[in-house]
Image 1 (cartoon, rainbow, N blue to C red):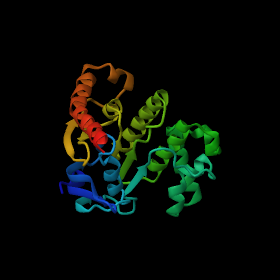
Image 2 (cartoon, one colour; image 1 turned 120 degrees about the vertical axis):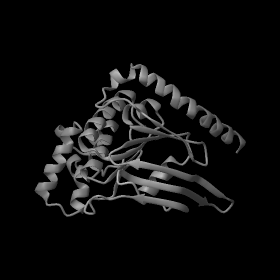
Image 3 (cartoon, rainbow, N blue to C red; image 1 turned 180 degrees about the vertical axis):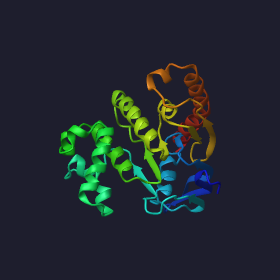
Image 4 (cartoon, rainbow, N blue to C red; image 1 turned 30 degrees about the vertical axis):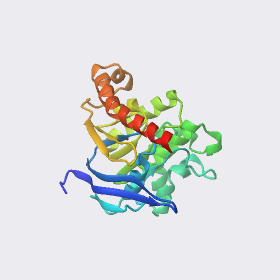
Length: 264
């Protein structure tokens, strides 16, 4: 593996077996993710994006192929994953939720509260440290999930449509805050989204997947300088050109996926 590569994936295939048939979720995925890179993945619904992320997180085992993750610090968690929807602990305060992984690792209380407070501040949650999740909006709960992922200080950060259920205003706010916190951390990150806009705002490169079974159709560099201002970025000619390029790649696959749905 090249020393600048954090992840190498070779011929990765995942097959699910049912009583009636076998279902190939992803097939012959070949890709690398560079150290410190923010990679976004887009593709039609059902193309295996989440399956790929779950394999990287160690939550699923591949049927064939190879995944190599290069760990720089064996004392850190290898991966941390932010799931779709809410995954906070309702009986814990905001601060306790954010500090949970540190408690599991045996970090002393004063130290873990100090670390958690830092990320609460970065995610705009400092005034809600002692609140419980039922007192918060969906957007605030997702802030907890993102803060908790960064607090665990993983080698690789995996995010599966973390803002997918939010309204547009909250999505924009969280995209900007995620950019700010990510740029300060330099974490290798993989982020699944259905939004081309969101991918262009966040990513260094965008991987476009085919309709089921999911394969790599293209990987497109996002040559837009950082730090990025979301409003200025969206009005730039480069943004429009890249949006059109990604949509042309994706449109064919979305139509294929719709055609498959009609046949079943």
